[in-house]
Image (cartoon, rainbow, N blue to C red):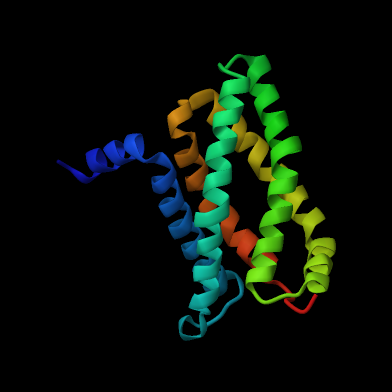
Length: 179
């Protein structure tokens, strides 16, 4: 049995676990890449604990929330007509993304040792910018995802784009930690 078949079988049997592992690996990798290529740290200066915290948030928060959200969307708005596509993207961007990003930025900030006052300052200084950039990336991705990709594979599509998005999020949530 080849690796792809093993993955597909596991994906069918235990999708949440597969998504959690994928998300954790992608977010950990994204944080390492952010530190090296965006923050320009030498490899020996990479904060691997920070990367593991970011990945842990992916496992415990991001993956379960996305899996649940995609199930809800598909149940409430089945199909891929133009109307249902626009409804899914609108709900995703207007109802899911804002609180999801708010909690994510808060979790990353707390995981990095910030207190409540610092977390509020971080949200005040970065949340709007993150959401504006979110609107530049995710509506198009989700439109293609909801139209072209079968429901059971949508998380994998998001995972591919998430590597680049999480490099940005890692940088943005770790920028000016004193804020």
